[in-house]
Picture (tube, one colour):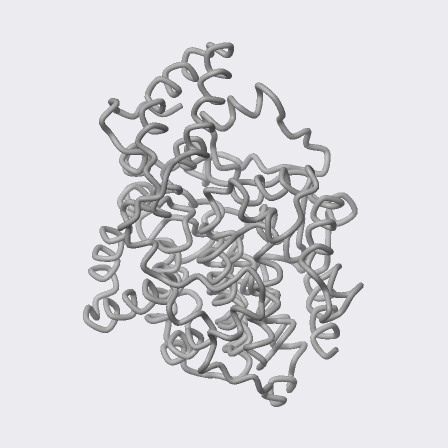
Length: 466
């Protein structure tokens, strides 16, 4: 575990922030990734506890401490986590010393304190509206949402969808090598990044959820349910991270959506649905309200509140990309399909205010990085800021967008996957990014180890016309 100076007075977010600021990227031009395969045996018991006290990101080698992140995330949601925070320094010490008996006991106590943490009544989080847990409740809040579908979106549908998938997978392959690091540390190792750092790998843990969604959509059409999705997760997906890990645990205990995403899930506002909502947009081209609905159904499997709204935003951006040509206007319009009184919308509008006021993207990112310093690098909000920065300044150019996403750091593969999908659909996938993929998507799902990207796009376009 990378050394982090800490004491009992430091907050969880400060521990995580210090870890992020100190972490020097593992140079992927020299070192290989450490991705899962369909043969990987995933940890349980003591091995899982050890992993959650000392983890590294498979693609980039970035350090993280999931138990610290759990406490940090619940604090972001307006809970008093000071009793849990008091245990973090000792937990980190025990993990470093491999004192498993004591660490096992302390971890159980940490989780107990976390699950009993009280709300902070006047915390800003509770000043916002969170429609749910049904789509009907959310739909009633969307007064400005146009329910119509633009049938013009079906023109060149397969070509646009292929470009969207190529943009997404290029973004994932580009970003996975540097995810989890901070702006300044990335610049120290790599300088300006505007191309693949190494031979691109399409293997990651993001796209598998979209592939499972396609399977369920193919079986059940637009009447698919979150329960059907959750059961298919259990059938196909062997392991998850953060919110998806908790969802799989809840599902395995028979807790179906929306409980699988909301029960004892401090990560429920994180990026998971925002990173995978694009498939819902590709299945509803030019039909943003339907894209939002599909993303809501999908999101309840693993997330709640703002985490779900992030997926809806990704889906709507993707759906509108088929029929719009201006990225800046797109960022604004897509917010009409999210609950207007939610914290997510307030945060997004605040980001847009910064981008309008500060024309220099590097300077704007400094402001946004400081604004979201209390949030984890996998939380939806700082990554939303990176997405919006990249789309605001892209002007249709994928390389420009990816350059700014690399500059921002954080969850780069998720962010470049979203931005790459949107720009791919709108403007096509440039050859320098698409050609090196060699029409190959690799995953760790048994039976889906090697897939043709062209065939995936054709399937998606065919299903979209239902």
